[in-house]
Length: 336
Image (cartoon, rainbow, N blue to C red):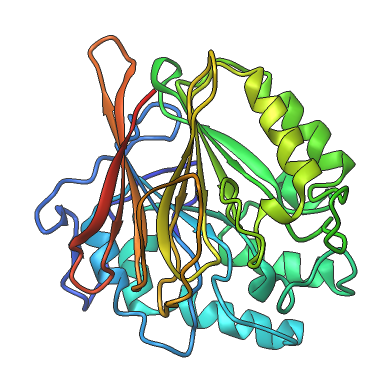
C-alpha cells in the first residue's frame, strides 16, 4: 500500500490487467508527493462487509482518484478478538481487487462502530488500543505517526501545493463518545482543542471534514450529530469563524444524499453522505437540509476539484456512483 507521504506509485499489479506502468486504462499516473501534486479527485465510502464481493474496487480504481478516504465500517468486526479483527482487515488489504486501488492511491481514513468495536459502541469499549492498532496497520499509518501515541485516531493532513492546498480532517466519533444526551460531548476535550487549532488556519483553499456519521441532517432516529445538539452547535460556531469553504463527507446510513446549510455572511456548509459499498438500505427519512433525493442503492462518493488559473477553487463537484458500473447516481456542484 502506498503511504500518504508518497501519493502516487506506478507499481504494477501482476495478473489483474487493470494497472500497469502506464496507469489505469492507459491513463498516466505521475510520481509526485502530496506536497506538490494538484489534487483533482477524492473518492470515499463506508460500510464494507468483508464477506461480500470486493470486485467493485475495480470500478473505483478506474476513477483514478488521488486519495481514497475510509469513512467507517471498513469491516464488520462486531465482538471480534484482535486476531480475528486483523484477519478481517487483511482479507481486504490483500484482496486483488482492493489492490488495484491501494497500490497507487493514498489511503487514509477513520472508523465507525463496526470496525471500532460493535454497534453503537463508544467510550466504554474495553479494547480501544488493540482495535486502534489493527485499524492503523490496515490503512498503513506510519509507525512514528502521532495517531499511534495519543488517544483516539483523529488526524488531519494538507494535500497539494501551498497555493492549492486541500486540508482533510478526519474525526474520531467513537473513542470519546458517551451515551446520547443533549449536552453530551461527542469529541472529547482533547479532540476539540486539536480541532480548534486546525480550524484557526485559513491557509487551505478548501477543507474536507470526514465524519463517520451525518453532520447536517436533523433526523434523530439514526446515528447523527443531531443526537448531540450541543456538539453540533459547537462545531457550527467554530466553522463560523473560518473563511475556508468546508465540505463534510459522511457514511453510516447505507444510502446516499447531499445536504447543504446556508449561512449568513459565510460559505454554505455541505454534507455528502455515501454509504454503503457492499449493501444498502431503503429507510427513508425527512431532512430539511437535503438537496435532491435520497438514493437507496450501493454507492461510493467522489469529489472532483476544478482549479482556476489563479489557484482558486472554481468548483467542487460532488457525485455518488454505482460501484458496479461506475455510472453517476446523482451529482451536485458545491458552490462557495
